[in-house]
Amino acid sequence: MNPILAFMNLGGPEMIAIFVIILLLFGAKKIPELARGLGKSMGEFKKAREEFEHEITRSADEVTKKDDDVKIKEVAGKEPREI
Image 1 (tube, helix red, strand yellow):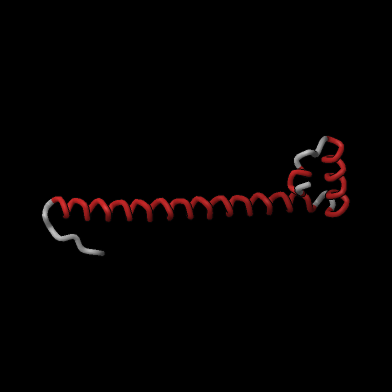
Image 2 (cartoon, one colour):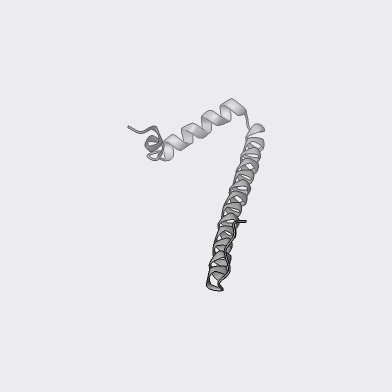
């Protein structure tokens, strides 16, 4: 069985047991700090992903614009040149 699929079948009792184990391992004072750190990490990951997607989109737009410029020059009778 795929280990990832095993986590999808967690019910209420299993989740409570996991929470109790985490509480025993880290203590009540550390859990909010861990959650805050996890939230910041997820926010940074989301920000990096959005920047990457923006860069890919911008690069694709530049390539499309250059192709359009070359086509316009060809239609106008001018020799296209590589940039």
